[in-house]
Length: 263
Image (cartoon, rainbow, N blue to C red; front, side):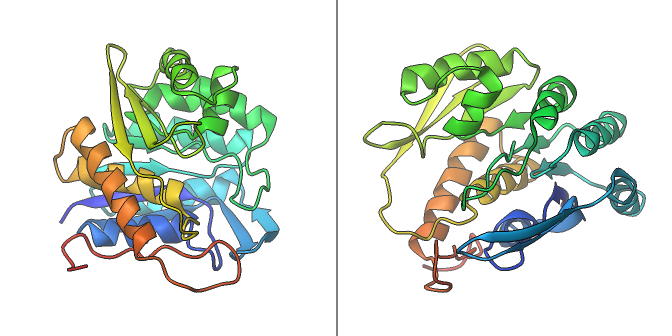
């Protein structure tokens, strides 16, 4: 069985972060391992508290996994601080694993800031050069690219600028773009590929970004090329939203159904 490692923050009840990643790996038949960067007290309504772990314990967790498992992919989410970003980047550089998916988590669904300004600089300078794929939403793409991102054309320019920072592939997610359909835009340095889908009106959306990045990582592990991995990940996220569960009193949770389970 293939193995993937997620490096991200925990989510105590809202179905994002480490929890969403591990559920997504499992649904794709990939064995998930994890290294936690921060512990959050969070539900579907709000993030009420957070403790960022030290680079030392983050390093120890990653080393404990990679010395015991053959890791086929790494999915990176919430990193919080410059020190953790640089620590994770240095480890990724040494591991030389080709399937590295970076979800540059900057804001929680509840609006809380999850990545400080110095850490954003470190992501751009230290981490993105090792990414096979980076998956910002429009808000994150705007911060990384230094421009306003609201339309498909501005997303294209942002993708070009982010690609110049070093990742092999950029996928600007379309959920926040002002387009009739939800269009995710992939740029590989040569050409653009659009992945369009209907805008779903339900509120089962907490953890969509985490799930999307983890699904891309899982599909890369399973041998699918990048364009097909993104297409499959987009469809999987749509499935988890459509079959979301009426749990919690805020943004409802997604249902991470196995990919081969009848709907």
